[in-house]
Structure formats: C-alpha cells, structure tokens
Image (cartoon, rainbow, N blue to C red; front, side):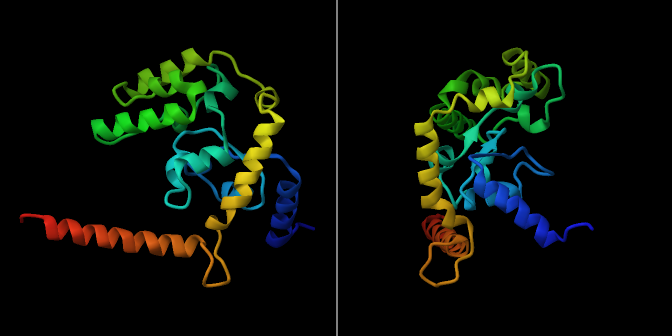
Length: 204
C-alpha cells in the first residue's frame, strides 16, 4: 500500500532529525521546501549554488545562512564531464556597484571558493562562465570526501546556530514570537516607511 503524504513526510522528518547533513540541490527553482525543513529540524543543509543566500532574506542574514549551511559548488561534485545546471554557473546581477559589493561579500563568506566566485562575474558571458567553472573543477569529488573536510567543531557550531535561528522560518503560535510572519510584516512596514521618507525628500 502506498504511504499517505503525511506518512511520507513523517519518514522524511525522522531521517532529517537523525542526520547531521542534508543534501539540498536546487529543485524546480533555486531553493526548495526541503531546505527549510532541514533547517527547522536541525539538519545542516548542504547547498550547491551561491544564489541560495538571496532566497532567505529577510529571515536570515548572509552571515547567518553561511553559519548554518555548508556550500559546495555543484561543479565540484559533478566535474566537467557531466551537465552543470544553470545555477552552477549563474552570476550575480545588478548595477556595477552592487555587483562588486556582492562579489566582495561572497568572497568573504567563502574564501576557499574565491577564484570560482570571481569566474562567475557578470562581465563574463554565459558560455565563458561555464568554461571557467569546468576549468576549475575538471574532475568530480565524491560527496563523502567533501563532507569529511568538515571538522567536529564546525559541525557543532553550525548546529548551535541552527538552534538559534530556526524559529525565524516557521509560523509561531504566540504573538510574541519572532516568527516568519512577524519578520515579513516588519519588513513590509520598514519598506513603506523608507518609501515614504524617500518621497518626502524627493524634489519632484
């Protein structure tokens, strides 16, 4: 008999609760519900695209996301002979100033991948970015070998931060909680206030 949706989720949740790492490749979009489930259930998410950082604002800062997740470039796992998804050689858009600011932030967060992040700069064409990525990772690295790089101290620190911030991604049952709904409402109010101030200061 095929398990119900509830039974299937219960099994997945049980596995995540017992796991140290949860591998979270992109789904139909850059992020996926399973990644949020991993965070809430205390399993360190392993992500494969730098764009994940942008998906959790305003719930988590870039530094907080770096502290709870483990970033492994997709190309490092699949190598140059396999197809790399559009996320695996995706860039970071925006004006020149914001692009340089984003690159600086990413290189600070992931210094071990500074060369890769520079190779994804939007000044390169899509074809050139893919060539750059394949050049940097000609051969695949087994996932287990990658995870064995993480020290016990790093694991412990990530689990501690997970426990501190997971509530920001759920809907709380009491009015005092700093939950996802309150964070979104605060962000909306903040944006409205900023828009009003800019309108008042505008000479138009």
